[in-house]
Length: 382
Image 1 (cartoon, helix red, strand yellow):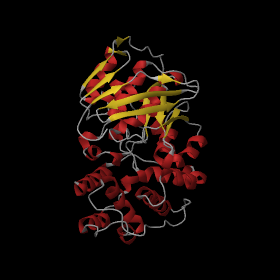
Image 2 (cartoon, helix red, strand yellow; image 1 turned 90 degrees about the vertical axis):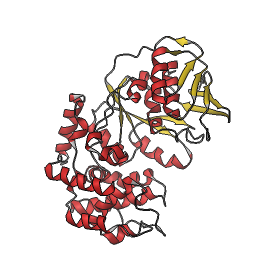
Image 3 (cartoon, one colour; image 1 turned 60 degrees about the vertical axis):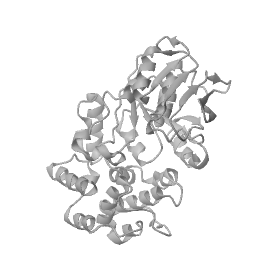
Image 4 (cartoon, helix red, strand yellow; image 1 turned 45 degrees about the vertical axis):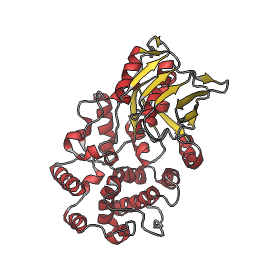
C-alpha cells in the first residue's frame, strides 16, 4: 500500500462458520487479505463492511472500487471521507439500522479509555480490536472489563497507518448486533494539535467520520489530559494500575516511560495516592524536544512535580530554558481539570452524567486562571 496513490479494489467479503469476515484489498502493488474475527456477532451489512474499509483507507488513495453492492448514501459519505472517487459493482439498498441510543466505546484498556468508560452510561458497550503480536499485552484488560473483542490483522498488513479512524472498525462492524447509536473514543486533549487552539476545542460534529459511521461522536475525556486520567486511575482503580501499565506499552517504549512518570507525578501531586514503583528510565534519551507535541506538553507537568532532572533524561538535547522558566512560573493545575469547551452543543444527557461523575471524582472545571495558563503553554509549544 506504500508509494504513490493508487486505486484500491475491495473484493466481495467471505464469512467462515467461525465468524471470520475476510476480503482482499488490492492495488497495483499487490493484494492483501484483511480479516476480522467477530465470533458470534452476526454478519454485518455490506454498507457497514464498506464503511469499515473506508475508515482504514482514509485519505491518500486515488479511488476505491467495491466488488459488492454499496448504497448510494455510503458511497457518497466514503467519497467525502476518503476524498476520492468511490464506486461499487452495483448500487445496493441502504442498510436499515435498528433504532438505538447505546454508546459504543472503542476501548484500548488503558488509563484514558478506562476513565472514558466510567464517565459514560452504565450500559455502554466496550469494543476492542485485538491486533495480536506485540499488542497481545492488551488482551488481559479486554477480558478484565468484558469488552467485545474483534481480532484482526489490519496492523500486520499496514492498514493502521492511513488514518486514526481505524479504531472505530469494531464499532461499525458490531453496530447492529449490539444496538449502538453513539460512537466514543478515549481521546484526550493532547492527542491532536488542533485542540491547542481555542477555536479547535470541539468534538467532531458533522464530520465525515460521523457521516460514514452514521453515529454521532461523543468523547468524554477530550477535555482532559493524560495527567487527569492517571490521577483518576490511581484514586479509583489502584489495584488495576500495575496491570494497566503493563498493557499500555511494551518495555522500552517511550509511552511506557511516560505513563510510569505520569503515575509517579500523579501520586506525588495527590499526596495520599498509591504510586507505582519508581520508573526505570531508558538507558539513553529517546525524545527530541519539538518532535512530539503530546510528549512535550506532558513533560511540563512532569518537570513541575518530579523535577527537571528526571525529565531531562528522556531528551537528547537540553530542554529549552523557556520551558523551564514557564514551569517555574505556572501552577499547571489545569492538567488535572476538565476543559468544558469540548462539550458544547452535544447530547445533554451524556454531558450531565459525565459532569456529575467528574465532580464526584473531584475533577473540577477550568477556571479563568486555568485558561490563561493553558494559553501560555500552547504558545510555548507553538
